[in-house]
Amino acid sequence: MIDDGKGWLDMIIDRIQYNPVYTIDTQSNFLENIRKRYIRLLERFERTMVKKLEE
Image 1 (cartoon, helix red, strand yellow):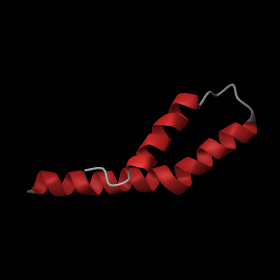
Image 2: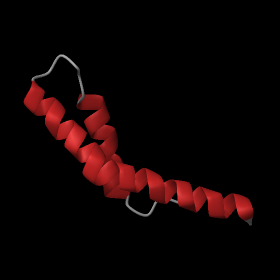
Image 3: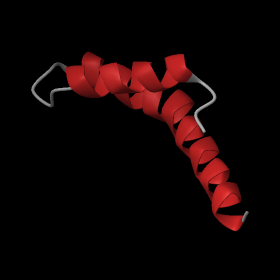
Image 4: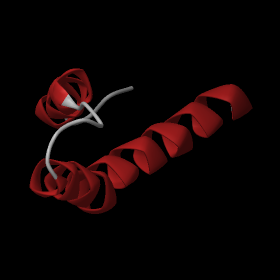
C-alpha cells in the first residue's frame, strides 16, 4: 500500500520535529516539504486505498 517508505518516514520525522515555536525558516522548510513531497504521497495513498475498496 505504501510505495515510498523513505518519503513516509521523512514525513513522520518532520512531524515529530515540527514545533510552531521554531523560527520562520524551519516552518518554511516544513511547509515546502508538505507542498512538494507529502501531498503527493498522501494522494497516491488515497488512490491505492480507493482501488482496494473497489475490489
